[in-house]
Image 1 (cartoon, one colour):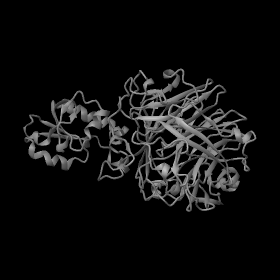
Image 2: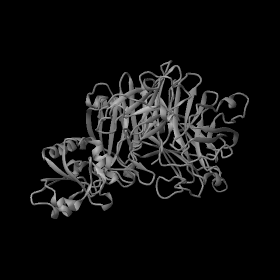
Image 3: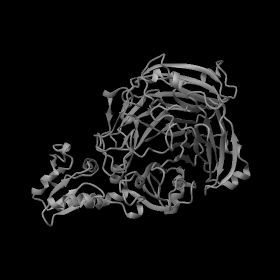
Image 4: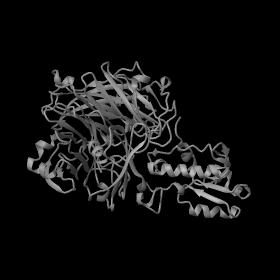
Length: 639
């Protein structure tokens, strides 16, 4: 069952309405409102703004005695709502009810408009009954302002020697936010609120760190596995809450990383790898709403096998976490098959975790599968203007130590084939090889080892490392939508430790624009500058980073990149300048880039801000344990 909620569109981004209904601090107030409606007897329901369906998706209104449903828009008359045909609001005048439920926030003006239709003494209840306290609001004039719901979820675990660390920066203050605060709630596995707290944040670009071990000590908690809900009050610039999320352990083999969850739930997610024979793959299903996920509400299927969905036959309570071993639903699935999740808009972008036989584990995330995209017939015709066009770049780590695998992933329901080529570049920017991967069917079961030819007499990487760019290969096929995705897997040949990440393509470093590309975080496209966040790690680790300079068409011969070491307060400690060749990359560790004195002054909770005003770089970050026993890798975020 898919929730009837509006969450995301390419035009408007994430919606604030479902966040307002599902905010943990609004749930008790919502139940109080519903209880009043149930006691009222016959209730006329007025839905002037079309918000009733979302409310009814997230809360049980079956106990409310609905005497009629009314709408303002004539075109909505007759629309089915709460099991009744909607009537024009003018019919309220003869409705024999003592209570009207006006399903809208900021409803005073809407209520005044209908008072002449109502008998004296008619009571009007509105969604304002479930508003958050004023102290949690950024924009108190417009309740559904996106800035009031700068929220996100994070997988969070402090159990069996496994810890979780969320790191971001107060970039809202840098955009002009005042008195920026963090309000957070931690849920346990059953969806119960363990603890809620609020912290005032330091100044612009100061570090925000929530560590599960520190949280446990601060509030005297037991062990937990669940999810963390984060709400930024006083946000400015945008409402997106971005973060890096590290999982680390007392065991030196436990180290992995992922990042923000995308704050809006989707109907479908792709990019879940099936297990090898010696692996267990777990999808962490974390309900993002107060309403339970019903039995049969979510399911898994092999990518391309829409008829073979296996549904989970159990209910998952509101805000609860369920450890779904994919073998529970798809016991025969084996790598390199890929799995699709039928999520029904019940949860935000989920994490998955893989355990292998040697006790090592890694965590990554699935990606939103688009339902609004179709193959774009113009893309094959635009090579003369856009060069390589859409590019999906990823590191090739030092080939004498790491193996790099790639699995292209369909990420739109209409994508039935993927015509792809892989272009290999040395760190110096020279192309060293081009490998057609074919016109892959949606149900392809292939993974490509990009390092095998580099290590076995094929083209050489003079630097020993570099990057790959996945691009559309229109000689193999014409179906392309610009939403090219892939899973990249990195295997340490010495220790067996593995990291993986996934992401999608963009147009890079051309002044021409096409459908909001090259993407810009601030202002209109093209986005031709860089601002990336590289967090430092907990004790016993060193942060590493691979910066890639992809270009759809030729751009500046070299970047002008500043690596700025910043302390926890956002103060700059030291800067290193690097020049990356166009189509090249720069692989570095913080411990080898900055002096011990500078790192000590920055402190363990500092970070590196990566800035470039000449080009858009794409970055991957990770941690390396002292001695190299484990490493992590994921793509970076900017703000």
